[in-house]
Image (tube, rainbow, N blue to C red):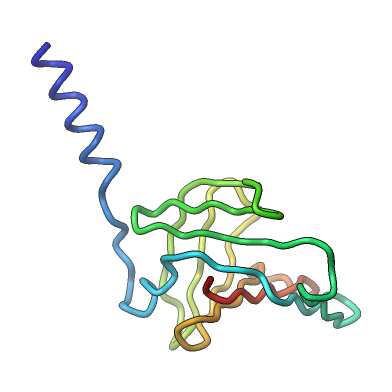
Length: 129
């Protein structure tokens, strides 16, 4: 019984640990984000959330976990890691996703995410919910 209690304590302790962020700014990612616009692609198109019939959200938690949603339904989840690149640019790794993303902060309440090393991909912009 004592052994089971000890294992339970260790599991609870490990699941509650906070992520070490590379800077104070990087810690701003924690919270709920709502997609507002995507731009880019070969044609340089812009797709605004207000002009389409779907929504996208992403939630980042202090414990290094994230959850993606489409139309408020879970669409993916896993762990995330952030590493510092330059002044307001970071690299964001999302478990179970395509590849590393560039992450930019625009003030307190806006972020943009785009696939690293992909000139023809779309950049998604999110605002804090």
